[in-house]
Length: 225
View 1: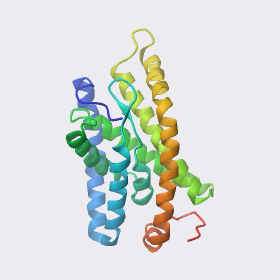
View 2 (view 1 turned 30 degrees about the horizontal axis):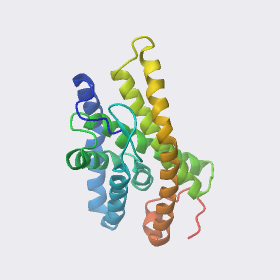
View 3 (view 1 turned 135 degrees about the vertical axis):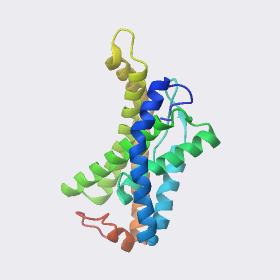
View 4 (view 1 turned 90 degrees about the vertical axis):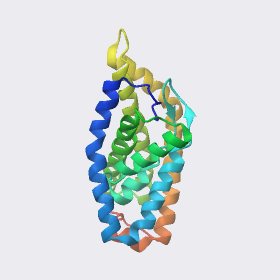
């Protein structure tokens, strides 16, 4: 994640853009509905967007054609559901490509798919599974954010391996190489992101408890304010 400008073959860049487009379109519908029907949630939507922007801007080199960083999408997925994070991820990645030279325009679709779609869906699914298992709220947030971060990079590794299969081992060998190199930097980053997301979620729980209750964030959890 952020796959750099011009790194993917044209067919892959177009394909990932087309795959991301329906999620972005429906996500815009979801956000518009939130803004119209629940204006009191605008501040939390801004917090989720800012959290994603700041964390994903913390770039460090990782593998050829890409870089490692936290993603920050887990918090928004927990608050607003995974679909809302697709357009947020698009806006964040677009601004970073234009202003910070992180990623690129031709690779925007691929980066949105990994960070704005796979990561949030993973975070939301893990968070809800944890509620079913009656895990503590803080642990659920940590697992959702940390594992969503890791699965984002698993997706990026798959994207790169698909575009550049190993001459002898094919997709599998290439995927293992990319994923293995990413793991060196991404595992500690994922743990750090999980812990930071717990801190932010607990802060929101303290100061925005009524809104979070209305959003059913605490459904299935025993929460003390």
